[in-house]
Length: 211
Ligand SMILES: Nc1ncnc2c1ncn2[C@@H]1O[C@H](COP(=O)(O)OP(=O)(O)OP(=O)(O)O)[C@@H](O)[C@H]1O
Image (cartoon, rainbow, N blue to C red; front, side, top):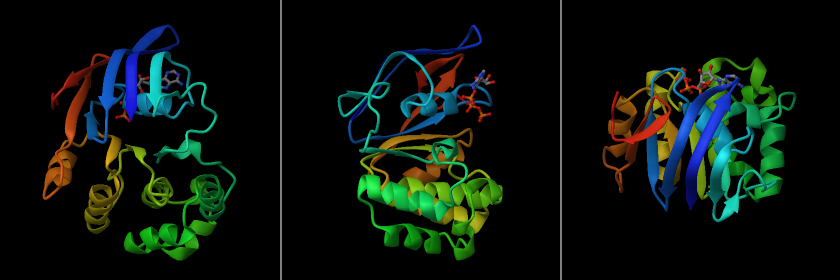
């Protein structure tokens, strides 16, 4: 369960997110918003990598004080160590979270990512490869809660359909942020449960598609 209460985030004296409240209990939420509206900032706060005001709890644990939230996973690339190859990163994640590396390689085969790519660090990959590999890193442990930043941006059309299938199949609870509203329809098509939609408007979280 993810519970956000009165979350506010300031950068350099300017407020980016104000009084955000959101509760997810085994639900999937898509958050829309224009460039610079604060979508990635919200995911960074949930990942515990930037300071925030208010409260963000994952399964009852405040993320700012939890050193390692095992139930949680993300595709935010800065979470993965810069120098390590994707394969070494996957090994570390598997050790911490108890995941199966075969799942990691099978997701990459499904997404048709060249096996050689995983021996590179993220910064040497193409932007599309980086998106696909970080998605595989976020999903292979079958985490209970996931946050995904722009899953289909920079991904070619054929692989995009596979990304959507993976998200439908593997993400039961979490947040997907995007400014591509067609993603909602793709996720809802033949899905077992409907995604909840919010839009960030002037720093506030507003219910529904306001794009
Ligand atoms: N570390 C930082 N220091 C100062 N300002 C920041 C920092 N990180 C983000 N911002 C600012 O916060 C605002 C929200 O950025 P964020 O990356 O969350 O937007 P976004 O909704 O994900 O945008 P996009 O759709 O373009 O990816 C932007 O104005 C950005 O310039």
